[in-house]
Image (cartoon, rainbow, N blue to C red):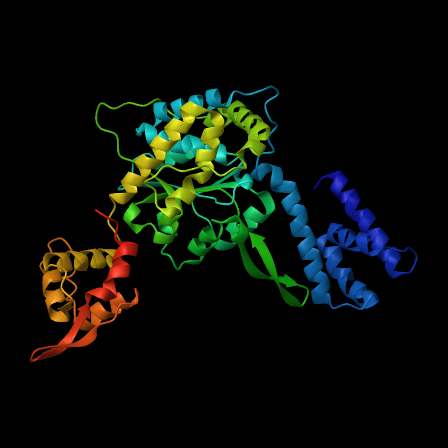
Length: 440
């Protein structure tokens, strides 16, 4: 224990004893800090007398002291958790710094140029995210281990604004860290704790997508009671994940996904410097300077290229706005990048429900779009489709009805001549086909 701390505790103890003996007045603002400052043993000895004098319960007093100590601890460690960065001391050419970052990425990662463009724009976005109303996730995915995810996250974490990096994170840590530090969260091994669209972590991450709804409500202890408290979830987030097929669909939908691949024999990249974080400090300062000078220019809606669905367009709106501000070359690169990444997403397998709709649409088409089809005929044709799951799942009429009920499609009792059995009318599907199956 330092002499300074020891002396501080003695002074606090002396004042509190004089307060109890009515020899000194202590106002409400001073009392809690003094109690929190004394030696823990001394606090235990006087807490009962203080609570009786103030006519408050010991439990309430303990809670206030614990809360104050936690706040002080946060203040002490805060500079160690997030970087308080000074902007670069002179004008920064945005296109020049963006080109530099993109080249550094391509030199160190086996990656398509379009993907490096997206990562670069997202890095810049972390300095400007509060100017937008959508916060797209950046998901780094790979089919297997050793494809460079951790390396990519290290590069990203060394360049983004106010980074907090972690290989795992609890639900409470997410919203408390965001509320307190306004960081960029860079999270590795998402596949180990994002277990599905219903997990609490997934729900919290999803809540931070739109600025107006980027909050969670949690009960927080206040004395002898709990009060509903609002916590922000509005922050840029990058998450690495093995096997994109297992990525929760709700997160996938809110993401700009960067698929990685393992490098081939003969492919080489520059080594990642051991002190890369510190080496990138000047670049972070330059990004902060450029962002400070250009944030007002970004408060405009940018027309996105045709070919993106509504969610993809929302995800890319902030990055396209930044590219537009960087200049015509980057605007062109960004449009090429978003279309390339959208095409990769379109190549992914659809959900089971969408696959079912698509297959039924094909069955109706092959039959010449009749007025209706019998249920048994639909099931028989579905089971003939190779590499689709219908035969393996032993699809029944009841199971088919349950799956189609999600879209508001119901079977009917249909009579044709002497035959009277259940089937599906084409008109039940028409609107659903138009909404959920992309045109050929």
